[in-house]
Length: 440
Image (cartoon, rainbow, N blue to C red; front, side, top):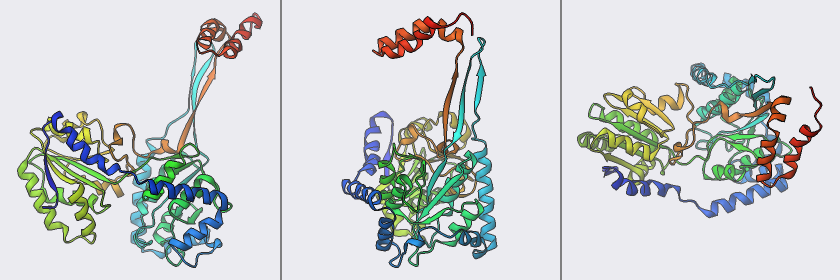
C-alpha cells in the first residue's frame, strides 16, 4: 500500500503522530555552512561571485551583462506565449489582486479629548525582492509563484520590485515568467538563482540594489539564506516542505481525495499528505485509489516516496478527535470534506488555508481563486499566517500628547522610568513639568 494507516484516539496518541511528522524538520549543518560561505563571498566579490556561481550551476557561458534582463525583452514576452495562456494568467492575476485588495490597511489618527492625538501610519517598504524558482531548468515556469508574491507587494504600494530567477542553460529566462512580469509592470528582473540571488537581494551588489523584504519559495539553500539574513532584511516566512491534511467523513469521494493527496506528494519527497477520517472504509478506498493513480503521474517516483515516508490515513473515532488531530498538525493546506463542513469551521484553530467542500481542492487555491498560496508549514500555522499585503508594509505609531496629558502624568511616567533604572528618561518628562509655562 502507498501509505501507512494510523489510529488516532486523542491525547494518548498525539506524541507518536507529532514525533513522526516533526522528523521532517531535521536540519543539515553542512547546508548552513555552505550558505554562510556564499553570503560572505557575495559580500566580498559582488557581481563577480554571482556570475561565477551562475556559470557553475546554471549557464556555463554566463556573462556579467546577462544578469539583468533587458526591459525590452520583458515587454516582448507576452507575444511569445500563446494568447490563451496569457489570458489565463491575466484572469488569475485579477482574482489574486481582488482578494488582496481587501487586505489593505489604512493609516488612522484619533483625536483625544484633551487636544492630543494618537494614531498609526501604514507605509509600504521601498523595495522588495521576489524569488521565483527555476523549475526543472526553467522548463516548468512557476508563474504562480511570481503572481502570489508580486501582486500583494503591488497592492501594498511597493514601488521597487526586483525579481530573481535562475537562468536556463542558454542564459535566458522562460518567457512565461517574463510575460507575467510584463503583466505586473515589473521591469527589474535578474537571471540569477539559489542562495547567491538571496545574498544579492539582501546585501546588494553593483548590479542588484539591496531590498527591504525578500519573499518567494525555494529549495533548502534559498530558505537557509533567507533565514540567515533575518534582521538585515525582512522575509515572508521560513517555509518547509509542502503538506496537506484532509478531514473527511463517509460522504467524501475516495478518488477525489486521493488526487488531492497526490497534488502535494508530487511536490517534494518530504511532502506530508494526511487523510484524517471517521470512516475506515473510506481510508482503505483512498489507499486503493492512490495506488491506481500513482502510476499515471509523470512524477510518480517522487510522489511514491513522499507517500511512503510522510503519507498516512489517520482513522479517528469521531469528528471531535479529527478536529483535535488537525489542530495538532496545524497543516499548511486543510481540506474539509464532510457533510457539515461549514459547521466545523469555528473549531479549526490552526491551518494555513482551509478549503471547504468537495469542489474546493487545494490546486484551486494554488493557482486561481485569489487567496495566497505562500503558507506556513511544519506546524507553524499555530502562530503565523499566509503571505499577504502586510508582508510588504510596516507601521509607525503617532504620538502627539497634549500639555495636560504629559504634565498630569509626569510623576507616574518618571516613577516607571526609575523602576527600570533609567534616570534620564524620568528627567526628560520632569523637565517639562518643572520648567513649563503656565499655558501652551
